[in-house]
Picture 1: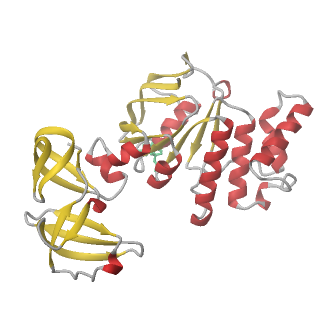
Picture 2 (picture 1 turned 30 degrees about the vertical axis):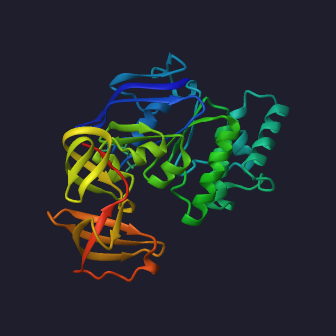
Picture 3 (picture 1 turned 135 degrees about the vertical axis):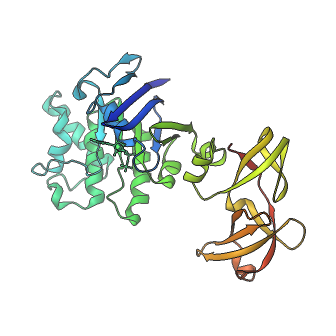
Length: 338
Ligand SMILES: Nc1ncnc2c1ncn2[C@@H]1O[C@H](COP(=O)(O)OP(=O)(O)OP(=O)(O)O)[C@@H](O)[C@H]1O
């Protein structure tokens, strides 16, 4: 069931088109990630949905009702900001209780207690934000938004202020809490791992427009464009001539998906290439990057195409030095991206 629908939203700042007829659907109960490069319009989209900015054209509906004319507080939408925006002079408990003035005292206290427990903040209720760690502040911000029980929660880069060691735990906690409360959430990130690991669906934005919306596995494995393929991870882009389920490429005939005919651009992840002792296609090693878990070989194919190959069994294979001639084979299908 659709909760929020955005139709052909356009927003300009002077000469800059921040959103260019953006359309997007958020399903009830889903965690949806909005990802894209800096300046592609992610924060602008959130601010329009929350009501902090007005669009020039287009419509925003929630549960079938237009909300784009409503004031932010009338939209039933919560927002967790990048800097958490906690009230510095209020305690943790008072911050969480802040949006609950419509409840009577007993219900408000119960809601604060429940959310302190939910976010594992018991014992910290009397502290002020400046007496908390970054991770704790983030949990208070989330608790405050959840306690108000909005229909939709918007999160703008909620993990960007946490250091790497905390981020992974904080992400899992947030996902579990959102799931447990059945909350619908739209969060903005420019971290592809965060988008892929946290969400039910991902929307990739480019220059104010949607490039693709789909499940994480689909956007990663079946990118709709070379841009999406490259934005979500390192990839090889190969030119080919397709005929049904295969394409002729510099690596020889390659299985492709989906079927296509004529000239195509294919995306093949670096893990989709393997070094072989014989057969395959010839290439020259131009560099070797040691990454610990894996090694990346940078290669040049016979026609000059630059390629990357990742191998995890590097300890078992002797290092291939730059300049060496090697043979390689595709071990995954090429995905048609253009
Ligand atoms: N208040 C503003 N005044 C002028 N230009 C703005 C304003 N807000 C955003 N923009 C411009 O609109 C475009 C989209 O900005 P937005 O902040 O939505 O991008 P973003 O995807 O959230 O970027 P980032 O990942 O860097 O935060 C950018 O070109 C930005 O410079």
